[in-house]
Image 1 (cartoon, rainbow, N blue to C red):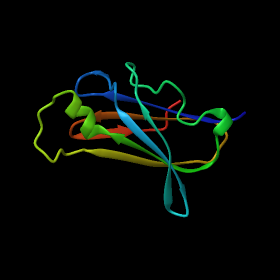
Image 2 (image 1 turned 90 degrees about the vertical axis):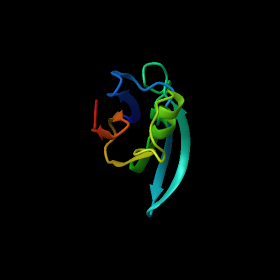
Image 3 (image 1 turned 120 degrees about the vertical axis):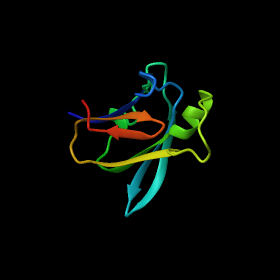
Image 4 (image 1 turned 180 degrees about the vertical axis):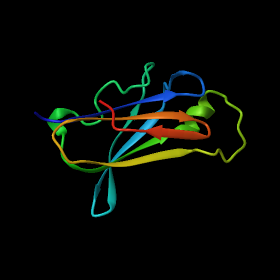
Length: 117
């Protein structure tokens, strides 16, 4: 079995998927990050394609950076600048050839994540 990586984002403050949320994806070697791609979530809060498809899957250390501040700005939410959460980085390791799913539950003042399925 070959692995792959997916993500999605849910806005717990609004009770909806976080649509049009920019996500940057990085791979880390020796503590240094290299950008692999940028994605935007769809109406379901998911990316249209896997972040890392089976054909590109590899083990290692990676990071997803969610642009939470810009997401709330585009919704015209009124918060004092600088916003409390602007960029939310999640650095994680993939050590098995399996499906990795890294969701983000977000609000303007907090977030959580976990390894999903």
